[in-house]
Length: 311
View 1 (cartoon, rainbow, N blue to C red):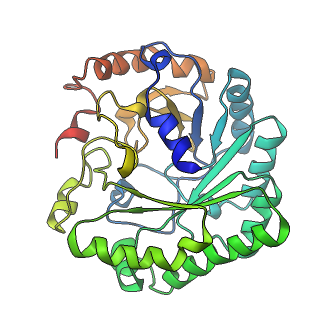
View 2 (tube, rainbow, N blue to C red; view 1 turned 30 degrees about the vertical axis):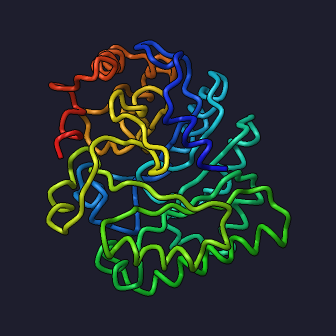
């Protein structure tokens, strides 16, 4: 189940409690920084960086390096929406062909149309997760700043994905996650989950993250309570420090930068330029070692991570 894989990454095992580390088990690589949503709870909505699509030759080079270094799980997304990339199925097939045992994808679901989803499953996708964060069409419009009609499209795309998998015998896990808001919103969200829970293998809840502190004030103004750091999923929260994102999972932007944060929209969190150095050199760069040392001491004052814990 996807929850077991998440827990394996967020639980920092002894060999990863150091400043110089073996290859991470999991890496997310951003095929595009673009997204057709502009969610208020996501730092992307503040346009903190330029966005574009990854260079295909760089993608092929760095994924081969990561596989050879020992990375086992490859996520073909990071901060953007990968279904906007025409060659997404080809990227999946390339990753599987060079030896990755587990290739996974997270999507907002609005562009996961049946033909595209089937192409991804046919290419060998192991896991497809829908970020299902809206209680109804009106809320989708208000939060994601898109037309309300997308809400029904997302629900239908989840159901189509299940049908495609079952009819064709694809070995692709189907999952959904949602943000557990406070009070009445939480109850509304549970009703929305009821609509799709029979079409996925597992649904799990996440806390409302502050995205490095960049969306904290607008979340509070909306009556929400963001949490500092990234403590994993709600039923198995981990300590906020040291943050697992700096130790157990890699994050690569569309322009080839290795970022220390799973919400890393700003340049101060860039630990290496993988256009200039190899993956493992970047993974254990001097900058990364210094940041990890602060996390392991549980004192991130004066580091790029400081604002994430000011809530």
